[in-house]
Image (cartoon, rainbow, N blue to C red; front, side, top):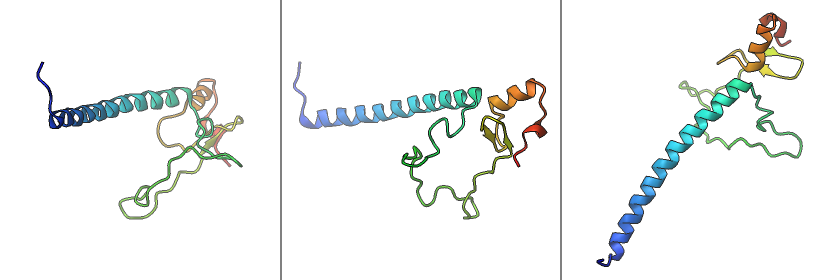
Length: 118
């Protein structure tokens, strides 16, 4: 077996690092898809996922860069207010797919108007 040079090993390391990063991105994409599916199926709220900080609790939200959260117009994007709310504290803005708690209530014979946030 021929000896490898330092430069050959360095090139091999670079290639393996690129390959590892590609695999990490692919796996992260798959994990994120499974997480989003579970959130939609079970209707988890942000609070249940630990994204609403309380007194003495650190928020799990990452710090946004100044350019994130801006619309194309340059104005800050706003979070939609809760349009629907149930007695258990579940909320939904009315945007995006219906959460599981809302679907279950409709299937149980409730009307969307029964959950309008006041």
